[in-house]
Image (cartoon, rainbow, N blue to C red; front, side, top):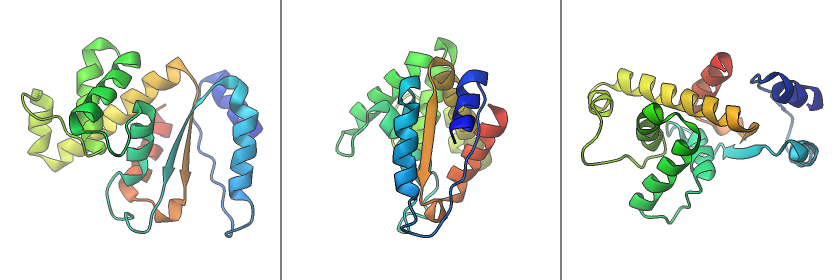
Amino acid sequence: LDATWTECVDDGVARIVLVTGPAGIGKSRLLDEVLKRVRDDEPDVWMGRGDPMSARAPFAMIADPIRQAAGIRAGDPPGDRQAKLARRVERVVPREDAARVADFLAEIIGTPFGGDTSVELRAARSDPQLMGDQMRRAWEDWLDAESRAHPILIVLEDLNWGDLPSIKFVDSAVRHL
């Protein structure tokens, strides 16, 4: 794990590490130790968790890390959620892409922007395939910008309860980044 983390930080690459084992074997303890060891690199650590109750809800696993990174809390009103997400995206994504990325990340986290939306978003809302492609593109563009600014460690716990769209988005991001 140390060698993989060092490679990611030093070489600017993305990697997936899968830790498996029966309940109680020490996976959470291992995570705690890894987090202590990578602290000096000042990574953003984003946590997602699979849940048997939301296993079929698309993007449930990656929505939490997006909300977490943006500082969105469960009780925040929709306008505040949108503003927080837009500010986080604008911090790292080039200005010409920030609105598009924020629009589609908002769709992933279930806080869509209303009103006068972009042409891309209006088109995607009428075509599920296009919506999926645009959300994946926004996710990858955002992760690319974030990872250029600082190291990122995304932890997805209880992957066995995760949703397939989240897993596919993470896989695609690792392949492209």
